[in-house]
Image (cartoon, rainbow, N blue to C red; front, side, top):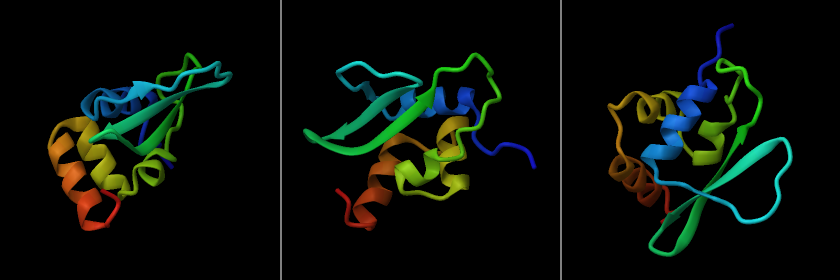
Length: 93
């Protein structure tokens, strides 16, 4: 089964959601924080391995969305505003 979310997708999602790197020392993963109105809404961990196609299928769960929504964030049909609206619908914002 092919990976739904790759490292390249993960990087695109982090950029689109304007996530900031968490302070402190991290080992095998970079921990990124998605902040909205001064509150941390989600945390995303990105594996540091050099493989571009390494699996990041945990990201939809981290972002509280479906895999298709997460892939939409990576491939441009979805925006940060769409994600914030989804979080508001779920009562997380």
